[in-house]
Length: 293
Image (tube, rainbow, N blue to C red; front, side, top):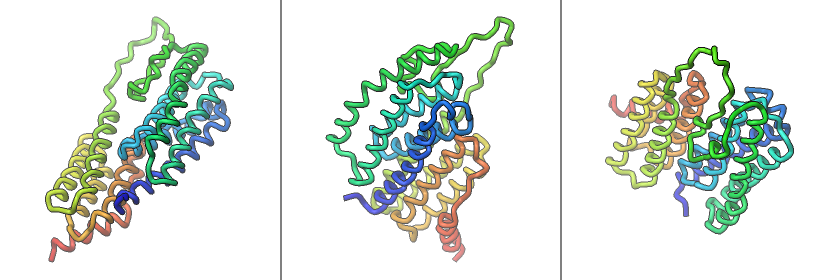
């Protein structure tokens, strides 16, 4: 039986994932039109990315794998909007989407994914990945790009899927800068997984200190990238965790949810939209008032 805080975190993930599925489905209804609207493409890409991140945090490997593939494919289409969508591409996208939706619906119904369910669905969808890689590479090449099927592998970061186009000899050299966001993304997801495991442990002084340390590490990461709103939220979370009067069953869903949502806003270049909820502020204020007594 799942503990209460685990149920609440899982419930939040399912609710969020269903919203993201709706976004993806709308984007797939008329894929060619979607490609011509950069904002819609970005929304669909972020939806797949968000499902992937939440699944990774919760250890839902099958959901993570499919959403990672979707993220990679949308990344390719973002970088090559000249691709002519055909019926086969639409069918391949729908095959992945339907399997992802079925997994999330099973998770909502049973609060778990059994090996039997996962193995049955993944055995059907695995061959689609290779077929998808071949076909999307073909479409990119037909549109004037240069891509090998192996390049569309989820063994690579979705930010690293290479799509290259011919450039005139006279064009100036482009110096690539290292993007700090993939590092930020990996560190945040690793820390969130650690926090999730700590919240499952008994409420002790040591586990609270470890949770505080995690929050402070996230704040320090934000300082390095000059993310003031992110830093403020992580510090508020740390203050809330410090108060032993705040039980883990209350803290866990609020802290995990807000850090994850803020993480997604940072990755979408919308850090200025980060807001600390009144719930988290109240838990933090309770701790500050306790210190003043």
